[in-house]
Image (tube, rainbow, N blue to C red):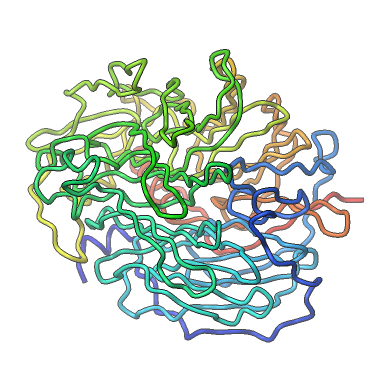
Length: 580
């Protein structure tokens, strides 16, 4: 086994037992099939997909739990998953049925109100599988099935009531270290997924599969080939191993039938061998769901050299920006800028504005018409030079999703500020299947974190709220540690977030940022929170389970402070409701 891969993965996941289906208990209610209409207009009582709706808001209209009574929030039930490492998936709920995924290619179905297990499914993984990111970010519901993608690059359909496997489709090549961590996106009879693995020279793609049969409908690559639009932005055949991974579930506009995806950085990291813009890496792309055709794109930064992959899909919001009503696509970039884009009628993605939300010393300016940044070339890493830059490799915000609350009119960002990076001189590298394709010694990558101005800052993590109409920061809550917090906001004027190494899960006043409630969890929280209602009672649900990138970033900070910080691991589903 390659020692560099061992060090990057931090641990090699053990082979899992064969497929397991535990006996079903009494179901909570009749299972209601999930249709396109329900996904387009989800009932407030349910949380049917990754971010609650197609637009990616991370918003629940439920308002039984409010800023006035959230102090009474108490644990309703807890369920241990039996797995360690990073638990990142949202509890998905449909009429009392809850579905969570965990590391180890596991799906657990539970009674959402009682916390009793209905069934459990595990995929048998290859014993020699290297898991660079041993996690899973959730399921998709469609019809009467549950869909999950796995770390050995398969898409699996399960019966939603019994957990019985209906079909399985190979999506990628695990021996080339293609793997899938995202929750699938379901729309118009198709289940869409994308491949991770850009750090090993995988060519990124989005692929769609027939929801009933598992047959592949289309596959669109995120690195343009010669003769295709954007193909001239890659020299020679560098696009074949050019990265552009798809790490996070896309958003979808049913009116235009376009799915929006965020794409990863190009490979390898040094740019000397891949001069050009390298489309469609570090971009937002709009794909026609029927055909997979690229209808529009916006590249956040060209010819990326900083590992600033922009994997979060833009959040789709109809709002006012700069005094004009627009169909906006909003993204808090890893490059530290808040991007305000426009979904145009022809499918193209237009530029409106970009605002720095954390310190960036690489961009000298941004073109007011196109949004194309101009770089300070002295801040661009490469061959024969060690270079420092801000924000760090982890970015102003990594994959944890933002949230939008239509009642407050605020857009919330889980940010990290005052952290920079210094990469050593790059090394010549050649693609080898199943090996790292980075161009830097792994020790130099993992130990690259630096403080801004070379001294320990008072704060790092920042929970920010932005007014999109004015382009102004409405409020910020600062933390002395880093923040790795997927967000949930609700109709009760609340914002929920974990993401800190003190294991606290907190509720904030969504209008002011004031902490209103907090609860100590068994482990750190890096999972997506959700809210749902059963029998007229509102619940807040989230998984605890620290690990993967949050822990790796913590290790980088520990090396700066010289004070190791241990966060307990172990996965637990935690569900809260109001006390009497």
